Length: 428
Image (cartoon, rainbow, N blue to C red; front, side, top):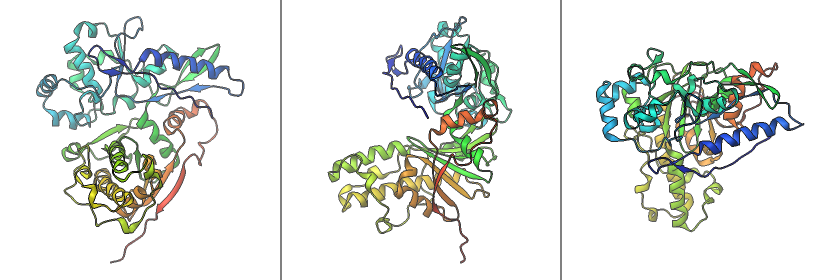
């Protein structure tokens, strides 16, 4: 396996807000592709991409990038937001129809609405608005395409009830900026450095990361993907989102085959990072000391799983705990994970369905024995696995177009599993 990692310095948009340097990113992608094609020990037949999907690249009539790659964390204008939802039936109505909470610029469609209203001259020059994965594909194919996993991921563009763009997208004449939807499992052929390549349309990273699990497991499961956000995916829950679920930060992603995936989100990874620093400072430990903490059931105090726990917020409440009450880092750390787990239990249960027998955890918390043991305690009737897929989003993107570059069956051992709890019947 060949890996390349690079970190680009951020630049500023016209408002002085930090954003990705799309020019530097474009150059790196093209140079890396050329470099890999030139390697003698690899034969490259197909290429696909996965990136975050919550921002657009705006192209002019002649294919030039004409605006910044706006950061999806950029603050959205309150007055414009309020005007939009009043015009189109209210936040609850739009959220239910598009299966997405109100998230400001993280609702990528709202970025286009802002441009139309605040920068009409720039908006009028846009020929195509491409989600970032599709722009990376465009760099090789020079063909503008739209992908369902990017449209359907918390953009507020897609009407999950009507299976088409939402009415507001059509009324605002934004739909015309989106090229035709191209199948996530098909390819375009192009020539790069005298090499014929089959190129996929690109996938939203969260949807791509789910593909290895769908390829390996047919029985219903939930995947908890952990990082800055901890997202519980249930691709076997076809029930429409409810108002209560939306209020608790649930939403729908889209499988590459066009099926909705019910999911819930927690900002637990970010909270963990903040609170671990607080613990380390208080107890005089280094920042990574938590990685040495083993699970100790005697340090678990009571049960925080209850109906009053809120998931549509960015903290669990542990920040209000006085650290002076704890005798050690280990004791305080177990309590922190209990707080996080109380939220995780509620969030995952929002997307739970009766047929689910397994819960897979990947990402940072999958390597955390305190988190994994507390998760198994919270779901005693399920098999709980720590799962590892090397470069899951890249593997998922490759699997989406597997039939175009590999005649062999999908490898059955691509996911490394560690069992933490075995499902069992409880007799009362």
